[in-house]
Image 1 (tube, rainbow, N blue to C red):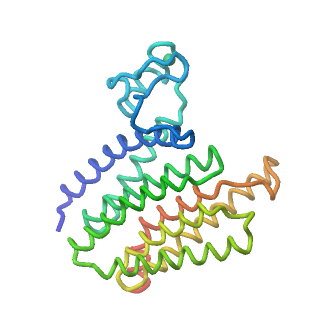
Image 2 (image 1 turned 180 degrees about the horizontal axis):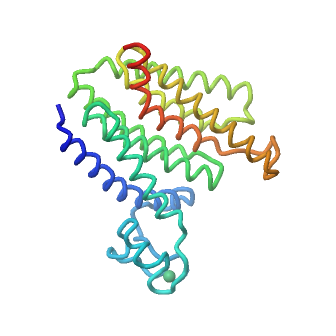
Length: 266
Ligand SMILES: [Zn+2]
């Protein structure tokens, strides 16, 4: 049983770790679509090419100290970098706050990081890169297995697998019927989120959580489309990156799903 002080400490540490991972995600989201290595070379200014020193690469703090400009050439650093760091940090902290056991924090933070990365890439390039999804799944699955062993909830894994297959089959069917409306990346993304969300409840209610996540994602995408059309910014037929909405639905479901199930089933 965690005391409130330990719980708060875990939330703060998760948030701080999220800042570092958010900084790494800005490298992932700019280099993966270009097929570049995410390890080498070190980060550098896109205008003057100067390597960014470690003391200028502290999440949020460096951006604030440098006033959002490169130290060498004063070119503006896009606001997306601190936003990505703050968003990842916020997601990690909320996950640490909401999940039932500390063992469950790592797999769902991995999921959150993967979803944030594919969402940004989908917004930029209108595609969901499979390698990011595969790496996310390859890290999250063993962490969920470890969480299952440590919390003696091996049955969760079976429900996760079941929800993952169900999510894949449903989206794959929809894609077969409307191939122009849904990318295969979105199908794989829903399989991954459904697997993780399905893991959350041992009685199969995780499948319902995965369903709620999907509905939330679709509702968010519809609401966004309606607002965009109403403001004259796009037509109804305009393409929309779907991953950010599916990801937002999934992350909200991670945080509220188990509580909803508890109220619903007990
Ligand atoms: Zn520069």
